[in-house]
Length: 215
Image (tube, helix red, strand yellow):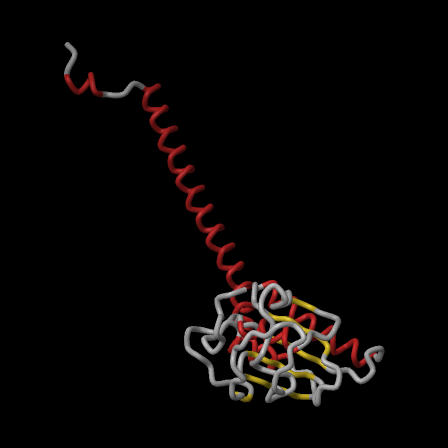
């Protein structure tokens, strides 16, 4: 006589198949957990590499900074035609004031090897950009090459983080290096990487710039 329990009992073949299925499920679950763990570690490593870089060169928050650098009274935001005369700027290099409209300005971000007229460069500042100007009495000297290489490294890193930064020579400037943002100026003679990065971090796309969301 066949009982209900004997009907429900698995055959040896079915039992082995069930055990194999359970082992397969456990192995599959283990692989999933390992994959999640490896992916999480990889993500943490990537963030560990990227976040410090953005921390060094990241743009400012929605709070308008009051430094670093010296705040300069604004010369306004007037557009002028190319070649038009205008009053002198308050500072050298200028940190605001009369400038050319599009398409004459702004100039491209990044590294420039020739002087940029103030009337073009200022439009970049109006858009929340940072200008790094340098003055080498002897452009062919080793010291000038070292300076421009150091500045270019900062600019390339900033551009890699999609920050609005440019550098260009400024013959006759009173100091060797000058950093300008809209209504801010920091001028000095000795290369200082941290000083430059701090200026970029504080002022790039800051609320002080009239058109900080423009490119």
